[in-house]
Length: 607
Image 1 (cartoon, helix red, strand yellow):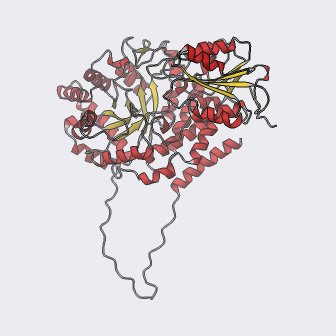
Image 2 (cartoon, rainbow, N blue to C red):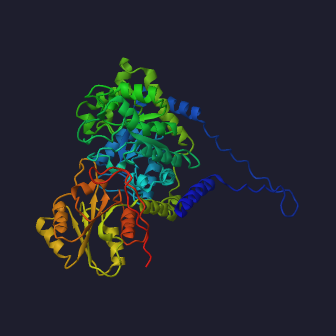
Image 3 (cartoon, one colour):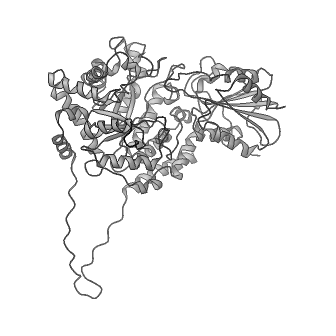
């Protein structure tokens, strides 16, 4: 309860601070000598702020018919300034300065993640040179840290339902919106409203709040409320991926996924969080490249389905905001439709924003041609254009395009923000099994070897974990391995455990685009089975995928964190040594092994 009170104070206090200002002191009419004060030269009054209608009308006057189509297209940028005269630079210049696309979305490429001040500085330059300001978005499902260094690092969504307190989801929404606005972003592609009731889902998994529609709805609503509670211009948030991506075994980056079930099941499960989001005032809904045979043709993605976007989402669920497609370059859609045709069909179906077409110029050409030919009516284009331009005005872009880079340090990744993120990670830890009272560990006595299983040598997985372990047990064997190691290398690593009487295996297992949902990579499963086969107790800590117990059902201890981020690593170590009370509950079912809501309490240990 103490943590909850602290978060409530933090949230309400921050809101008050954002809206409270000192009254200006009255101007003196006389000098200290009693003589009339000298008259200052008249200064030009600043222009009155533009209202939403005025701003939209002004922008529309600036746009040619082709540029109106371009305003519906959102293209990627990396956050780094492109090298002068490079192919990337020329392409980006063409899309922004010549085509006048309407929006930018941050993605990470081979160059990694940019830092916060650099992104803000680049956006300032782009905005100040734009004919019509850009609507800038980011795929910030676990805060801005998913794409930008130097921002608050939050756990994945599933951790919030494990913690069981919607105040935590509200805190993430509020902090994410505050940091987004500070860096020049107006649109967050979060929260994920998918109900992950398929353990083999290769792309959603811990990105979802869980498998129970009511709990997912509660967390989605709390995130939206938190994001909208920040004073000043509102940051847009997005419920995704309609009509629901949780019950699929296909990654739509690879191919078209199919959502099974009849209409009553869709109403009860998939659509419940979207209804909650709409009731909560969500600004946008992102489509999924998902075929839904119960609603339309079994080979037609929802992104291109008039029955699903206009019929179900608009007419039945009553959504009035912006409909944005998932990335049009994804194979789940692109393999069946050329870029231009996909863009036109998406608009015909009811989408407003065309996200990341593989060939943006072809998409603009096709939409402009469809309007000229009458295939898309001018009213249909204008409806979407009005929504996009109105969003820009509500984001304050008619009156202020740039942000104050110098102020970022005081408003982004603050100590208060980090404390909130760590509290969420601590509260989410779930203990499913604890045979023989294996936990909590003691910092002295016994012989425990720690294995940290990372997915790749290139990342930072396990670094925080190893550091935290060494601080507590300096003499323990801490063996770090990764999926790309050979069997000989893994066997040699196992030998470093010496005469340990038990093992703690910390396994990083994330689910990601183009990767799928493997239990563990390379020879790591063999290593875990070999350790368990020695007859010594093994504690398995799942960093990420909570279903990992299915692959190692005989371990003595199973703990899960639902995330691979450093705060979750710190929380796991704290839980292992009894420094925090373990209170998390499973937000999913682990088939045949654990039920929804399972979780053993483990009080904090006091020596």
